[in-house]
Amino acid sequence: MQPFDPYASRRNFLKFLAASPLLASAAPAIAEELESGLHFEDPMQWAPPDLSRLVENPAQAANVFDLEVVAHKNVPPAHWGYLTTGAEGETTLRANRADFQRFALRPHRMRDVSKVDISTQLFGQKLDSPIFICPTSSNGAFHKEGELAVSRAAGKSNHLQMISTVATNSIEDCMAARGSPIWFQLYATSSFDVAKALVARAEAAGAPGVAITVDVISTRKNETQARLRRMDKRNCLECHSGPNGGTRSQDKPHYSKITPEMMKGMSGASTNMTWEVARRLRDGTKMKVVLKGILDPEDAAQAAKYGFDGIVVSNHGGRDDDGGFSSIRALPDIVSAVKGKMPILIDSGFRRGTDIVKALAMGATAVGIGRPYLWGLGAFGQPGVERVLEILRSEVTVALGQAGCASIKDLKPSMIKTYERA
Image (cartoon, rainbow, N blue to C red; front, top):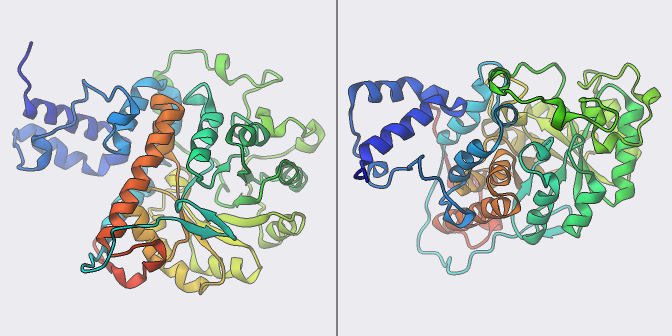
């Protein structure tokens, strides 16, 4: 048996980082270290991630990234490419992580944090945590139980959950699996009648709210996904064939009652989405309606003016736009523009409890996660999703305590120090 070499293990880990599309900006420094053979004095050299010995069960995961590498091993290349890709050069995807370094939490001492309450109120509902489950497409690509496993995991710890229009499983089946209502996310497409029918189905199923996605307005150019798809030698039709033999999003369960006539000439991008279209959708339902994909303070102020129930500050996880503007960087100006008139949710790039607490201190009401719970799903199914949520709740609790806050309502913007780094 070979003796354990921490430096060799670290080099293997650096190679993994250099190959990751999420960390491409660090590749030059990583390459320099590999080339020079330098061994930096940091804690990783004493307990380096050993990629040849992945965690064998969810309980062993120290953070959500431990589950990412297991999912990478389990999930086929084309499906992994769909999960991990960003748009074009993936500048926005990387900015979503890098820009958290612009904001620091100020530690506060001499306060009683022996009991920390991370519950929050949203639209009159008490949630055990400010962490919500973002709508993500086609969860069946990552685990055979798909969104059903996610719903059961989210329900066990009372997390707000949103389900995608193009989910593998229907909202009705996911509610049955969870045992309580979940929100619906609407890809409006170019057809108002189809959008109206999808919203009506969600309301009939008992959904308390709908998030209208407003940031999918063009064809995606996902280069990482395209490259990994070429590496996948499987016949895609074996797992992507819809009920009519098709492979389109419209073959997913939520479109089962939409007639072909309604979909004739329909495009997947909502290029015709306007304030008036969104207001017509809102006026046709009793559900709460939020707009998902807001990044500009003027748009946020308009959403409040038009009477929407809330917004989700989001760049779709960097999957559609490559302008490089992160959600966390957009948040302060949006909070100022909204002036407390409606709840502000946020997603894109959240991986740590400190990320979540920073956003809450800056004025967000709830914080969504997408890729991390899919890593858990791809790694271990429902138990993996449960572990991701458990890790993040624990980290949020610790971060609140370090900030000197016994509850989320004790957070305030002055606890954030902003650094204008390049």
